[in-house]
Length: 270
Image 1 (tube, rainbow, N blue to C red):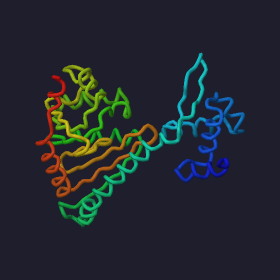
Image 2: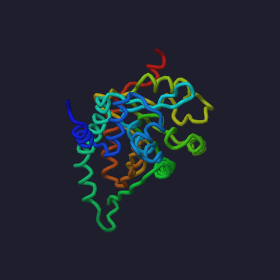
Image 3: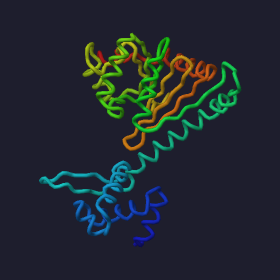
């Protein structure tokens, strides 16, 4: 049988902190524990316990269970982390794939060259809100790849104001999505005229298979700006690349995909 110290080290090698690994093994040993029990058994302050448990929840290896008005924390098999690791691998692959184009764009930065490239970084919910609000400056169509459900990250009240301003300016979008049953149901429920969070007409939404383009977070293109927002409960960050040549290339790729994508209305009619 593996020693506890060896197991903790292996968990740390997977990316868990020492305290997260300790609490996870404690949960495994007891299956379920109340917060106070975790505090007492681990000799750890309650605030530190909460902070580290949140990380375990995000990794999918623990969950808070409400039982008879008491909250308990239950451990899940460590293999559940595979989903998170797969997502991280996909994200890294996407970044590597875009590295060459990004490198060329950065190389264009020079003095007063009208085609020079500028990169801006944004963090947190406020940063994400700013990126979305910046799209209101568009002089034409906004091109979007979206994972859907952004309002839960930027806040419903903000998103309603954003949609109201979009309608006021009569802005248009073209949106590509990877369709899931959840997204389809959301479109059926909320993408109706007059709904406060309806930004895009269903006629302007098309579906592309995830095996062709795996969409995570939001990618938005307008004017000479290419923006990406990575949406997570704990960390929200994004960036804008402003550069004519780079954005023209990305927009042409989008147009090619758009012409091969299937209208979401085909699925709504099913």
